[in-house]
Image (cartoon, rainbow, N blue to C red):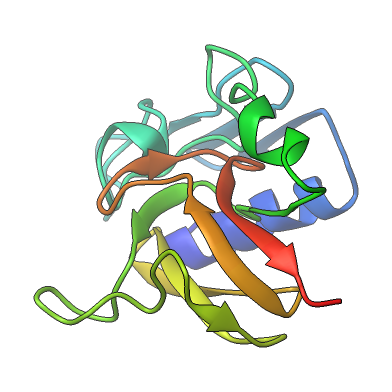
Length: 164
């Protein structure tokens, strides 16, 4: 099982809201538990890729679970309480990047007006760069993530004041 197949499997389990899954294929055993549990992937020593047992949130490029052992990320109550702000959440586990490349200006900053579908940031998951787009037009009120920070599925990334 390669990284692409594992990523597709995790995305499928998230999409179908499957809490627990186990697969054994030859020397590879994959066990995924969501909702406060971790994903563990074991591979035989002769496999062409290493075995992984750390959450993706530990280091960029590692394979991990859709949720961490510490449970779901804490919800930020402060921005949502203000002015009925729209919260953009991460659809995947990975590492947050605010700009398209190191040294480049960020996609957005606080105070910027964004349109529906505009790229807000990138989340790297298993060496793939996933653009996170705004699902509402409005003004960026607050950034809730930090550049280079590991993030979890459902973690709040941006607070946006929707256009009227």
